[in-house]
Each structure stands twice: as C-alpha cells, then as structure tokens.
Length: 498
Image 1 (cartoon, rainbow, N blue to C red):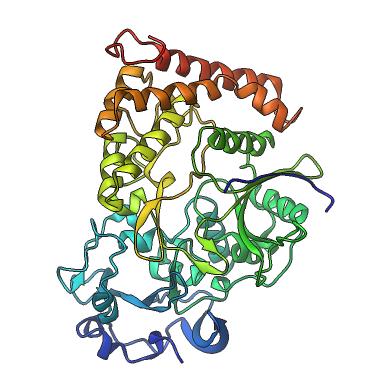
Image 2: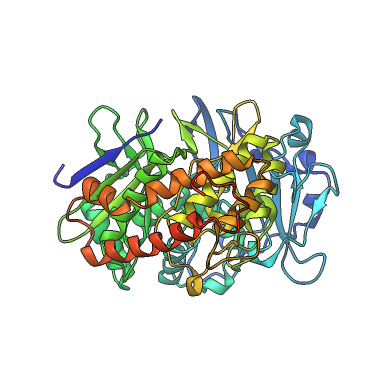
C-alpha cells in the first residue's frame, strides 16, 4: 500500500413486492393514482441478502421530470433478520400539500420491536403524520438514515447534473438513493442505482483526490461513484464506506464478503490535513480514559492528503446492528445549539437503555468532552445500539475531536453552563447520573490526567504530523478546562485532591 497507515485497536420475495393493501389497511387509500408521465419506472434485479435470494425494485430517474416518489417501504434488517417495518407515503389527499404519513406493518406490531419508544411508540394512531420539519417530516429513526453535510452535498450535486431541481426532491426520493446502505439496520425500497452497494474498487489515494475535486466544485464525473461509497454517512466532513481485509489490512471501496466494514474520513474544504491525525489522537485518548471506541487507523497519503478511518460498530461479521442517535430518540433538532443539555442526555440514556450503568457511561462522555474541548457535542454525535436480544446501550464513541464549538460554547450545557464548566457543575451532573461523589471524582481526575498529557500522546502517536502551533493551541484550551475541573473550592470537599 503506497500510503503509510497507523492503526489502533480496542476491544422468497420481500414484503415490498406484496400487495400493500393487505399489510397496510388504510395507507394505500392515501396514494393518488400515478401519472402516466411519472418519473419512476421499475426494473427488477436479483441480489443476495443473508443467504436468500431477494428481488428488489430499482428506481430509474428520468431527467427533468417533476414527479416525486409517492411510497417507500421500510425494512428492518437487524441481526440477520429482514422484514417490513413500515410504509411511508407522500400524499396530498389530506391537506392539498405534500404530507408524509407513516404506518407500522402488522409484523412490526406482532413482533413488538420498538426502535424509538419515546417518539414513535408502537401503540397509538395507526397512521402517523406531522413529523418535525427539521426531520424533513420523517419519523426520527427513518430520518436518522439520511446523510447530512457531505452526503447531502453529493446527492444534491448529482440531482442538479441530471437536470433536477433540488427543491423538488422529496425525502422519499432521497431514501431511495440510500437504499440498503444506511447506517444502522434500515433499508428502503424502491432503490435507486446509487443505493446499491459499491462493487468498484477505488484506491484510497484516488478517493482522497476525487473528494478534493468535488469539495472545490469540480469532479462532476466522480459524483456517482462517490455517492455509491459515501452518500449515506452523516457529518460535515467527506466520508466513504470502505471494507478492510482482516488478513492483509488492505482497504477497498468494493463491498466484499468476509471483509470488515469501516468508515473513512477526509479533511473538509478549508481544513489542514492534520485534522485526521488529531482525531486519531482523540481516539487514543478515549481508550486511555476507558471509553469504548472503535478500532481506528490514520493514513498519511501522497500530495499532502490524509485520512482517518474507524471500524463501523453498526456492522458485525456481515450483520447489521440497529442504532439510533440521541437526536432521533428524543426528536431534538441537532442543528439548534442548546436544544438538549447533558441532563437530558443522561435521562434519555436511562429511558432508552433502562440501565443505570449506561448513565454512568454517559457521564464519562460528558467529562471527556469538557476536559478535551470537544464542543461539537450535539445530539447526533451520541447514539445507542441494540443487542440481538433487544437491549439498548450506548454506542462506542464517534466523531470525537477538538472543536471550539459555536462561538466557543458546547452544544449541550452542563447544569446551565456551556462555556466555562466547573468541577462543581460536573459533580452535580454526576448526581443526576446516580453516581457517588467518589466515583465521579475518580472519573474527572482520571480524565484530566490524560488530558494534561495530550501533547505528549500526540507526539508519540503521530510524530511531526500535527503542527507545533496546533498542539500548543489544543493543549492550552485543554489546560484551561482541566484547571476548572480541578478547582475544588465549590465542590464541597469531595475531590480526592481537595
């Protein structure tokens, strides 16, 4: 491999083809007859899913057509299962304007699988509507499957190159472009060609160069390939879904049986390549602080390019793992700073997992973010994953790196403070997590000790990759945070070093 790399490790037909009238008693009545000029035609291709042959509808989009996709079937594919979870319909029959309506399938009700008990309980009205506009009027677990930032940029540019107006692209059509490549365990039918898994190998060096071209407004010829490998992940930085050969350590963009699913990131348009090394160091610090973190790898690529990769925790030995973000679980608009605070995070964690130990782990995430100045701590950067027996828990940490935050503030505050968070406020948060003062003090002091050694850790892990000015700046911010967390005058004498 020409790029130098550095690694750190931790620990029968589908229902969509059946008559939806029999499975969804009311929803089919809302679908208007299709125009003879509709822009969607269906062809049928055979593919393999979990060892069984399936037949999936593929959406073919004609250029310039104004029609929108009217129905999408949502499938649950967690832990080797595959069954229809629900149906989404876009209709004007109720209000005269496009309105998205959701209905659980009979099978979902019979199985009792509740992916979002707080915002989308199984019990309730048969037809659900009026979902928030910040979720594109989709249910939270479905909206979680759509990309933001980079993935949405790719999708919009591809639509424009095909003569489409992005304002006329409905959320159901976007789901068709995600298909079965969504994060977590959901898939959507019909499927656009870009929603299929990639079978094309693109070397990482070429992938990084193509990403750079697109970021600068060029590289239109790469859009479709990049959408295939990077259209579904969330976050602002360019990303791609890649697969790692566990024997050789080599990476490919082609979905390959037996390979590990990874996610690779590249710097954003105006970012220095060192941001990838910084995230690698943060991942190492998470491990040193005892926080569950995926395996990670840093790449120093030719021509001054770089990449950071992490093993996906929503995939395991070819199986899909159900996941949902804190934003999806609560319905919070992650783009609004302060919409949730860390107390909300603790309480949502208890509600989702029903496990007080998970609240303690959520508290650890809060302490780390405060000490290490990760102020991009919005509700989409925390998630829960579901075990095979249906138990939810906090996912491994992800998207954790140095960030100044909006105007220097944390996205989520600690006991009302989002700028200069003190030890006393962290100890009050620990009470919300039902932790003893001694246990909370141990967490705070242990993480502050690691944080105070950030520069040494970075120089050992990625020597001469992060500039000295950047290291000094990060360490300075961290030291200010640590000083406030070590200050014990207002903490009632609980601190070990009081």
